[in-house]
Length: 301
Image (cartoon, rainbow, N blue to C red):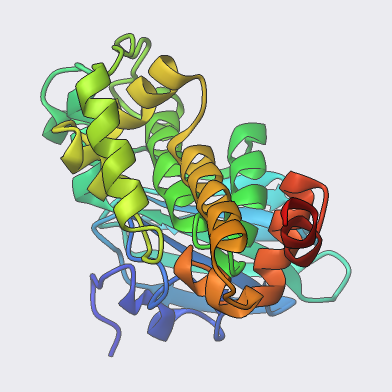
Protein backbone atom coordinates (compact mmCIF):
# COMPACT_ATOMS: atom_id res chain seq x y z
CA UNK A 1 0.00 0.00 0.00
CA UNK A 2 1.43 3.36 -1.03
CA UNK A 3 0.78 6.16 1.49
CA UNK A 4 -0.49 9.56 0.42
CA UNK A 5 2.54 11.31 1.87
CA UNK A 6 6.06 10.46 3.01
CA UNK A 7 9.28 12.29 3.78
CA UNK A 8 11.78 13.31 1.12
CA UNK A 9 14.39 11.02 2.67
CA UNK A 10 12.02 8.03 2.73
CA UNK A 11 10.75 8.65 -0.81
CA UNK A 12 13.54 6.40 -2.11
CA UNK A 13 11.40 3.38 -1.16
CA UNK A 14 8.61 4.47 -3.53
CA UNK A 15 10.61 5.35 -6.66
CA UNK A 16 10.66 3.09 -9.71
CA UNK A 17 14.19 1.82 -9.01
CA UNK A 18 17.05 2.48 -6.56
CA UNK A 19 18.98 5.71 -7.04
CA UNK A 20 22.55 5.59 -8.31
CA UNK A 21 23.55 8.05 -5.58
CA UNK A 22 21.76 9.91 -2.80
CA UNK A 23 22.78 12.68 -0.39
CA UNK A 24 20.71 11.03 2.36
CA UNK A 25 22.98 9.94 5.20
CA UNK A 26 25.90 12.06 4.03
CA UNK A 27 24.69 15.65 3.76
CA UNK A 28 22.38 16.92 6.48
CA UNK A 29 21.51 20.32 4.99
CA UNK A 30 18.22 21.64 3.60
CA UNK A 31 18.44 19.74 0.29
CA UNK A 32 17.97 16.10 -0.64
CA UNK A 33 19.52 15.10 -3.95
CA UNK A 34 19.44 11.86 -5.91
CA UNK A 35 21.25 10.94 -9.12
CA UNK A 36 19.19 8.34 -10.99
CA UNK A 37 19.10 6.09 -14.02
CA UNK A 38 15.42 5.39 -14.65
CA UNK A 39 13.78 2.68 -16.78
CA UNK A 40 13.19 3.30 -20.48
CA UNK A 41 9.45 2.94 -19.95
CA UNK A 42 6.92 2.89 -17.15
CA UNK A 43 3.25 2.19 -17.84
CA UNK A 44 2.06 3.56 -14.53
CA UNK A 45 3.61 4.42 -11.21
CA UNK A 46 2.17 6.11 -8.13
CA UNK A 47 4.43 8.18 -5.90
CA UNK A 48 3.36 9.65 -2.54
CA UNK A 49 3.61 13.37 -1.95
CA UNK A 50 6.25 14.97 0.24
CA UNK A 51 6.02 18.14 2.35
CA UNK A 52 8.88 19.63 0.32
CA UNK A 53 9.03 21.21 -3.16
CA UNK A 54 10.36 18.56 -5.57
CA UNK A 55 12.26 19.21 -8.80
CA UNK A 56 13.36 16.59 -11.33
CA UNK A 57 16.04 17.56 -13.87
CA UNK A 58 16.57 15.50 -17.03
CA UNK A 59 20.30 14.99 -17.66
CA UNK A 60 20.36 12.21 -20.25
CA UNK A 61 17.93 10.87 -22.85
CA UNK A 62 14.55 12.10 -24.05
CA UNK A 63 11.23 10.74 -22.83
CA UNK A 64 7.54 11.47 -23.18
CA UNK A 65 6.05 11.93 -19.71
CA UNK A 66 2.41 11.82 -18.70
CA UNK A 67 1.08 12.82 -15.28
CA UNK A 68 -2.51 12.31 -14.18
CA UNK A 69 -4.37 15.50 -13.41
CA UNK A 70 -7.76 14.42 -12.09
CA UNK A 71 -9.35 12.34 -14.86
CA UNK A 72 -6.99 13.68 -17.52
CA UNK A 73 -3.36 12.98 -18.34
CA UNK A 74 -1.03 15.91 -18.96
CA UNK A 75 1.63 15.04 -21.52
CA UNK A 76 5.01 16.56 -22.49
CA UNK A 77 8.33 15.60 -24.03
CA UNK A 78 11.31 16.16 -21.75
CA UNK A 79 15.04 16.16 -22.54
CA UNK A 80 18.33 17.27 -20.99
CA UNK A 81 18.08 20.59 -19.19
CA UNK A 82 14.31 20.42 -18.74
CA UNK A 83 12.70 20.05 -15.34
CA UNK A 84 9.48 18.93 -13.75
CA UNK A 85 8.19 20.57 -10.56
CA UNK A 86 5.89 18.90 -8.02
CA UNK A 87 4.27 21.05 -5.36
CA UNK A 88 4.37 19.91 -1.71
CA UNK A 89 1.85 17.25 -0.71
CA UNK A 90 1.00 16.23 -4.29
CA UNK A 91 0.56 12.52 -4.93
CA UNK A 92 1.84 11.72 -8.42
CA UNK A 93 0.60 9.11 -10.86
CA UNK A 94 3.09 9.05 -13.73
CA UNK A 95 4.00 7.09 -16.84
CA UNK A 96 6.70 7.60 -19.46
CA UNK A 97 8.50 6.18 -22.48
CA UNK A 98 12.04 6.85 -23.61
CA UNK A 99 12.35 8.04 -27.22
CA UNK A 100 15.41 5.83 -27.86
CA UNK A 101 14.25 2.82 -25.87
CA UNK A 102 17.19 3.26 -23.49
CA UNK A 103 17.10 4.28 -19.82
CA UNK A 104 17.12 8.00 -19.02
CA UNK A 105 19.18 9.92 -16.46
CA UNK A 106 17.79 12.39 -13.95
CA UNK A 107 18.66 14.35 -10.82
CA UNK A 108 15.97 14.68 -8.16
CA UNK A 109 16.04 17.64 -5.79
CA UNK A 110 13.91 18.24 -2.70
CA UNK A 111 14.01 21.57 -0.84
CA UNK A 112 13.19 21.28 2.87
CA UNK A 113 9.81 22.98 3.26
CA UNK A 114 10.68 24.69 6.56
CA UNK A 115 13.84 26.11 5.01
CA UNK A 116 11.92 27.12 1.89
CA UNK A 117 9.30 29.02 3.90
CA UNK A 118 12.01 30.66 6.00
CA UNK A 119 13.77 31.96 2.89
CA UNK A 120 10.42 33.24 1.60
CA UNK A 121 9.84 35.12 4.86
CA UNK A 122 13.33 36.62 4.80
CA UNK A 123 12.75 37.84 1.26
CA UNK A 124 10.04 40.04 2.76
CA UNK A 125 7.12 38.84 0.66
CA UNK A 126 4.35 38.55 3.23
CA UNK A 127 3.03 35.36 4.81
CA UNK A 128 5.32 32.51 3.66
CA UNK A 129 2.60 29.94 4.36
CA UNK A 130 0.41 31.57 1.71
CA UNK A 131 2.93 30.81 -1.05
CA UNK A 132 2.09 27.86 -3.27
CA UNK A 133 4.38 26.12 -5.74
CA UNK A 134 2.75 25.28 -9.06
CA UNK A 135 3.29 21.96 -10.83
CA UNK A 136 5.31 21.97 -14.05
CA UNK A 137 5.84 19.02 -16.40
CA UNK A 138 8.58 20.08 -18.81
CA UNK A 139 10.23 23.47 -18.40
CA UNK A 140 13.60 24.68 -19.67
CA UNK A 141 15.50 25.99 -16.68
CA UNK A 142 19.19 26.78 -17.31
CA UNK A 143 19.76 28.06 -13.76
CA UNK A 144 18.63 24.83 -12.07
CA UNK A 145 20.58 22.82 -14.64
CA UNK A 146 23.80 24.73 -13.90
CA UNK A 147 23.37 24.63 -10.13
CA UNK A 148 22.70 20.90 -9.97
CA UNK A 149 25.51 20.08 -12.40
CA UNK A 150 27.91 21.66 -9.89
CA UNK A 151 26.13 20.73 -6.67
CA UNK A 152 26.04 16.95 -7.12
CA UNK A 153 29.82 16.62 -7.70
CA UNK A 154 30.43 18.91 -4.70
CA UNK A 155 28.44 16.62 -2.40
CA UNK A 156 29.75 13.38 -3.91
CA UNK A 157 33.38 14.48 -3.74
CA UNK A 158 35.77 14.17 -0.77
CA UNK A 159 36.29 17.92 -0.30
CA UNK A 160 34.87 18.76 3.18
CA UNK A 161 33.95 22.25 1.97
CA UNK A 162 31.38 20.75 -0.40
CA UNK A 163 28.72 20.86 2.31
CA UNK A 164 29.24 24.60 2.79
CA UNK A 165 28.92 25.06 -0.96
CA UNK A 166 25.64 23.12 -0.87
CA UNK A 167 24.30 25.18 2.03
CA UNK A 168 25.04 28.39 0.15
CA UNK A 169 23.60 27.06 -3.11
CA UNK A 170 20.42 26.08 -1.25
CA UNK A 171 19.61 29.75 -0.73
CA UNK A 172 19.67 30.47 -4.46
CA UNK A 173 17.82 27.24 -5.25
CA UNK A 174 15.04 28.18 -2.80
CA UNK A 175 14.68 31.70 -4.18
CA UNK A 176 14.41 30.50 -7.78
CA UNK A 177 11.09 28.59 -7.41
CA UNK A 178 9.75 31.56 -5.47
CA UNK A 179 10.45 33.71 -8.50
CA UNK A 180 9.41 31.30 -11.24
CA UNK A 181 7.07 28.57 -9.96
CA UNK A 182 5.18 30.33 -7.18
CA UNK A 183 1.67 31.75 -7.02
CA UNK A 184 3.17 34.74 -5.18
CA UNK A 185 6.45 35.48 -6.91
CA UNK A 186 9.43 37.21 -5.37
CA UNK A 187 10.38 40.07 -7.65
CA UNK A 188 13.04 41.63 -5.45
CA UNK A 189 15.25 40.36 -2.66
CA UNK A 190 16.38 42.83 -0.04
CA UNK A 191 19.92 44.09 -0.48
CA UNK A 192 22.61 42.36 1.53
CA UNK A 193 24.16 44.22 4.45
CA UNK A 194 27.81 44.13 5.40
CA UNK A 195 28.98 42.16 8.44
CA UNK A 196 30.78 44.03 11.23
CA UNK A 197 34.51 43.49 11.70
CA UNK A 198 33.84 41.99 15.12
CA UNK A 199 31.46 39.38 13.72
CA UNK A 200 33.86 38.58 10.87
CA UNK A 201 36.62 38.09 13.44
CA UNK A 202 34.40 35.74 15.45
CA UNK A 203 33.57 33.72 12.33
CA UNK A 204 37.25 33.58 11.41
CA UNK A 205 38.18 32.33 14.89
CA UNK A 206 35.42 29.72 14.82
CA UNK A 207 36.50 28.38 11.42
CA UNK A 208 40.18 28.24 12.46
CA UNK A 209 39.26 26.34 15.64
CA UNK A 210 37.22 23.77 13.73
CA UNK A 211 39.16 23.16 10.52
CA UNK A 212 39.47 19.46 11.29
CA UNK A 213 35.68 19.17 11.48
CA UNK A 214 32.89 19.55 8.94
CA UNK A 215 32.25 23.30 9.32
CA UNK A 216 28.77 24.17 8.09
CA UNK A 217 27.24 27.38 6.82
CA UNK A 218 24.59 27.15 9.53
CA UNK A 219 27.27 27.12 12.25
CA UNK A 220 29.06 30.11 10.72
CA UNK A 221 25.77 32.02 10.54
CA UNK A 222 25.01 31.25 14.21
CA UNK A 223 28.41 32.61 15.25
CA UNK A 224 27.55 35.84 13.43
CA UNK A 225 24.03 35.85 14.99
CA UNK A 226 22.45 35.95 11.53
CA UNK A 227 20.12 33.77 9.52
CA UNK A 228 21.83 31.52 6.99
CA UNK A 229 20.12 33.40 4.17
CA UNK A 230 21.42 36.81 5.21
CA UNK A 231 24.82 35.55 6.36
CA UNK A 232 25.70 33.97 3.01
CA UNK A 233 24.81 37.11 1.08
CA UNK A 234 26.27 39.54 3.61
CA UNK A 235 29.52 37.58 3.90
CA UNK A 236 30.11 37.91 0.17
CA UNK A 237 29.13 41.58 0.28
CA UNK A 238 31.67 42.17 3.07
CA UNK A 239 34.59 40.03 1.89
CA UNK A 240 34.12 39.65 -1.86
CA UNK A 241 34.13 35.85 -1.56
CA UNK A 242 31.78 33.05 -0.54
CA UNK A 243 31.90 31.24 2.83
CA UNK A 244 32.79 28.07 0.91
CA UNK A 245 35.84 29.70 -0.68
CA UNK A 246 36.83 31.26 2.66
CA UNK A 247 36.87 27.91 4.47
CA UNK A 248 38.90 26.30 1.67
CA UNK A 249 41.42 29.15 1.91
CA UNK A 250 41.73 28.83 5.70
CA UNK A 251 42.29 25.08 5.35
CA UNK A 252 45.05 25.71 2.83
CA UNK A 253 46.73 28.40 4.95
CA UNK A 254 46.66 26.20 8.05
CA UNK A 255 48.05 23.27 6.05
CA UNK A 256 50.97 25.45 4.96
CA UNK A 257 51.71 26.34 8.58
CA UNK A 258 51.67 22.69 9.60
CA UNK A 259 53.97 21.73 6.72
CA UNK A 260 56.37 24.50 7.75
CA UNK A 261 56.29 24.02 11.52
CA UNK A 262 55.84 20.26 12.04
CA UNK A 263 57.22 17.00 10.72
CA UNK A 264 53.75 15.51 10.28
CA UNK A 265 53.27 13.41 7.19
CA UNK A 266 50.83 14.56 4.50
CA UNK A 267 48.09 12.22 5.70
CA UNK A 268 48.16 13.71 9.20
CA UNK A 269 48.23 17.27 7.87
CA UNK A 270 45.26 16.46 5.64
CA UNK A 271 43.22 15.15 8.58
CA UNK A 272 44.12 18.21 10.68
CA UNK A 273 42.55 20.51 8.08
CA UNK A 274 39.44 18.42 7.47
CA UNK A 275 40.39 16.16 4.56
CA UNK A 276 39.82 12.45 5.09
CA UNK A 277 41.42 11.67 1.72
CA UNK A 278 45.13 12.59 1.59
CA UNK A 279 45.30 12.23 -2.19
CA UNK A 280 42.47 14.69 -2.66
CA UNK A 281 44.09 17.09 -0.19
CA UNK A 282 47.36 16.90 -2.14
CA UNK A 283 45.53 17.57 -5.41
CA UNK A 284 43.72 20.62 -3.96
CA UNK A 285 46.96 21.89 -2.43
CA UNK A 286 48.77 21.62 -5.75
CA UNK A 287 45.88 23.26 -7.64
CA UNK A 288 45.88 26.28 -5.30
CA UNK A 289 49.61 26.54 -4.54
CA UNK A 290 51.22 25.31 -7.73
CA UNK A 291 53.31 22.68 -5.89
CA UNK A 292 52.71 19.48 -3.95
CA UNK A 293 52.70 19.54 -0.13
CA UNK A 294 56.08 17.75 -0.11
CA UNK A 295 57.60 20.23 -2.56
CA UNK A 296 56.22 23.16 -0.54
CA UNK A 297 57.78 21.82 2.66
CA UNK A 298 61.11 21.27 0.96
CA UNK A 299 61.10 24.78 -0.56
CA UNK A 300 60.56 26.63 2.73
CA UNK A 301 63.04 24.68 4.82
